[in-house]
Amino acid sequence: MAGATGPLLRRPHRARPAQAKGTLPPVLVVNAKYDLRTPLAGARRMAQDFPEGRLAVIDSGGHWLYRKGPSVRLPVQAIDTCLLTLKTPPPGTVYPSN
Image 1 (cartoon, rainbow, N blue to C red):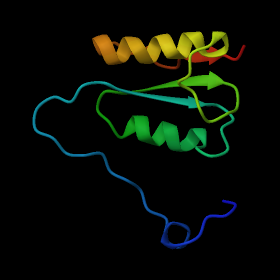
Image 2 (cartoon, one colour):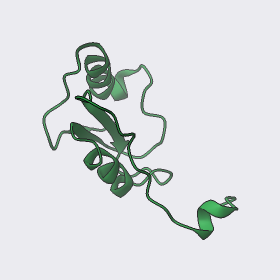
Image 3 (cartoon, rainbow, N blue to C red):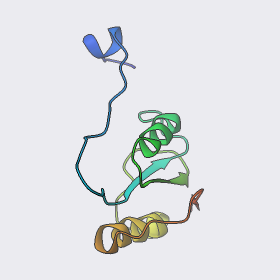
Image 4 (cartoon, rainbow, N blue to C red):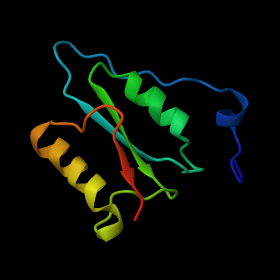
C-alpha cells in the first residue's frame, strides 16, 4: 500500500462481524472487480462473515461506487432496494460496467 504505515501493515488481522442476539438483517457488500484499494477477495470474505451476507460485483475498476449516474445505475438501484426493503440481489450478481 503506497503511503500506508503503522501497525496495520505489520500485523495482518481479520475483522470479525459484530455478535448480536436474534436475527441479523441481510448485509449487501458491493465491490468493483478491479478496485485496487479494496480487493475483491476481501469483499468476498466480508460477505461470507455475515449469515445473510451477499456480494454484488461491478465489472469495473474504481473505488467510489455509490454515485448517481448512468454508469452505476443498476448497482445504485440494488443498494437502494436493500436499504429500503432488505432484499438483496441474487447470489453471484455481477453488474456490467458502462
